[in-house]
Image 1 (cartoon, rainbow, N blue to C red):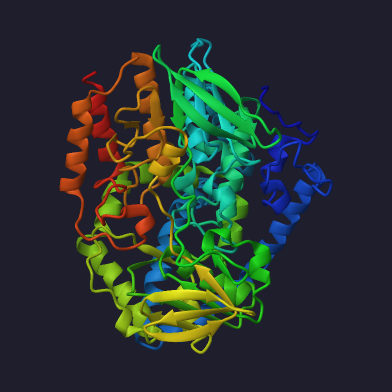
Image 2 (image 1 turned 135 degrees about the vertical axis):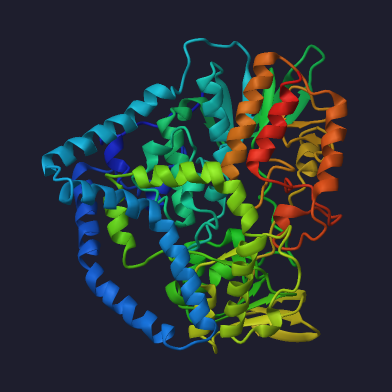
Length: 613
């Protein structure tokens, strides 16, 4: 079967990077599924129009600053929990903009103090962008030396894309199979309309080619999840992966061959019959966040959070909504449902409160100006990423100990106190739990005390009704128009491997890269690779480089290393693992997913092992 390729439009690829993602541009569909209503490629006129729109937003900054100052002064003059919340959020927002402010201050000082002519400044900016695009020569996407091994990558999400690029850069030509019609993985499958990523956008960008995508990725802030989806698809196109990818294609079965490699049964959605191909190596990059945990089955009025679309959200206008779970997804959905989609009320339910950290707002008075300027002066974003790579581990650790823990504790307590939810202040240790970023959750609760409620307890059952669903909480029944299950995912991939004919225990793994008794196979972003609040893309890059090392050495991992690493994981893991269990625990309640340390330590330990081969 010949890999599908998408026809390129006549518009400049550079021009398309300036335009905000739209539903039509985000979904990269194949030829067989593309609809007639798909919008045309971006033109230069549209690009100019987008700049005019951004200039209009910049022009409104003075009024926004005045309104913001008035609202902040009203709070600042009244001591209390809300004052503490605002102070901490303001400091966090300012820190996120420091690299950009420093960069622009340097340019301003160069002109005003040192007397640098404006024309020289223009030359400097042009030279800066020349260096940015020369970066492509430093990190080529393909090497002249080519390897003959046939490699299959299962999954076209961020991990599959990153691994494919690493293989190309080292002379391997992989084949990617993606069961949907577009790149993006969990970002493409799970919409979460109006919600933001809980990791800074810069942390979702690949380091080597980071500078090429600074134009639309606001790296100083937390962006909407659609931005990460756009980034995955744009990067795949930039790397030329479409000609190597088979969309709407799924692996049905793998059969290990005695001579090495695997016989793979593939099936396309456009064909009733499957077909067989031989591959020397198989890399699983299909991700664990695909099987939702549900208290009851989905129905007309009961749906999992990951299945929420903008159409679903808009249909909830004037409705009473109930959300099961109050971790990352549950709390993030409250703001958009109330403000953007007009729900009458939103009620959350969870057995206890969680730890929260201050997140920056998606909109603030200074952000439009920064977004506009940083299109042309991206060095601030590069500085932020470089700092994060060097100090990210220490920063993540400091947020759970010492001063960082004290600030986190003060912020969480103040948030619950200002909303009258004192009984939900967490008493469990922050160690081993996932801190949730608070963008506008508590602010929404504060301004809508009668419409947004937080119930402490466990949901016993959810029963579909004629015009809604009945929820049983703490022995009492309540009726709601719509129920959203923000209950996470079942991350045990063993059943999925079994359906492919591979009976393995994925928790007997080596750094989430190789699985015991599964030779010639690799596993990306698997068990033991998530690490605190650091970027998951760092794990993808570390693992992709390690896979290339093993391929180049034609080596396998000794059995003793699997047992040694698994034992170390259990010994080093925190006992308390409570927040967002999809990321941290399996059915036993023990940690098999979270690496008990930073990604810097993860890479050091992995390199130490591989150097012994």
